[in-house]
Image (tube, rainbow, N blue to C red; front, side, top):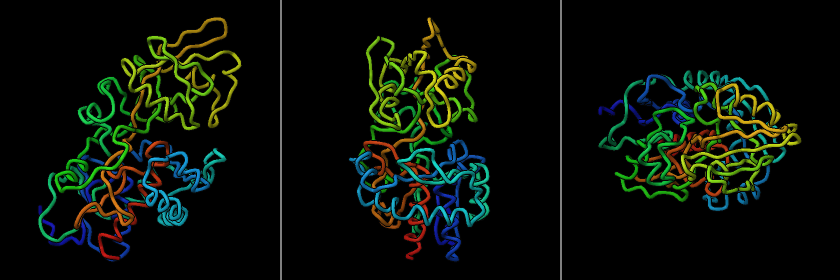
Length: 357
C-alpha cells in the first residue's frame, strides 16, 4: 500500500471515518480515506440520525457502569460543540430534541448528514479495504463498524445463537478493525460480550434496510416477555437493551411479547404499542390475537458491538495507530449510549491526535 503522499490513512468511511477525514483536512492534512464497500456512510445511513448524550454525567456513569470513565467524560463534555461543528458542515438538523427527558441531542437526516460529511472528507477510495497496516511512519486511524456482521466473532464473544440473529446494520461490519488492532498488539476493551440492537418482528417478516427503525418493537416494558420455552424476562432499562441482549441468548434468538388491551394504548417514542404491533403484523411476523390481547414473536437484531479496541483519551490504541467508531469498545459497557455521538467525538479526537495537534 502506497502512503507516502498521505499525512494519515483512515480505514472506513462510516460516521467516524468521515468525521476523522473532515477534521484532518480542516487542519490542512492530506488524507487517504479507504472504504471497502461501494458507498460511504456505513450504518449511519441506516440509523434514526439521533446523536445524543445523557443530560448528566452521573446518569451516563450509572447507566453504563463498566465503561471507561475517561472516554465517557470525553464524549459527554465535547458532544455539544461537535454537534455545532457537524451542522456547520451542512448536516441538516431535523429536530433539537431526543424525545427523552433524560437525554439531549439533535436528530439529523441520515442521508443529508452522510452527504455533508462526505463533501468535507474529500476523496473516498471506494472498494479499497485496508488488509494490513502500512509500514513506515504514516499514522493510521481504524474507523470500522465493529464486528456485528461477523457470525463467527459474534458466536465467539456474544451468543451461540449468532446464526439466528437479524443483522440490523451494514453487512460489512465484520471485524476488520478488531483483527488489525489485535495484529498490532492492541488490548481489547471490556464488554466484548455486549451489543446494541433492537428486537424486531421475527421471520417470515419482511424487513429491509429502510425498516430498521420503523419496525423496531420497543414495548417490552409494557409486555409480558417470554422465550419460546415460556421462561419469563422482566426488562429493567428504559432503553430495553437488556431485553434484546437476553433475547439474543435464547433458543433461535427469539422471544414473545404479549400485551393486553390497556398496554396497546401506551406510547413509546412517539408510537403507540398498537401501532408497533400492527407494523409487525403488516410486515408478516407471527402475531396472534385473542380476547383483546396480542402476542408478537420477535427476533434479536444486532446493530453494533459494544466491545472492541481499547484506546486512551487521545484515541490512540498503539504507536501510530488510532481508532474511533465501533472499532473502539468500552464506552457504553454495561448499558446504552449513543454510538453516533462516540463516533463523532472520537473521530475528531483521533484525527487531531494522529496529526499531533
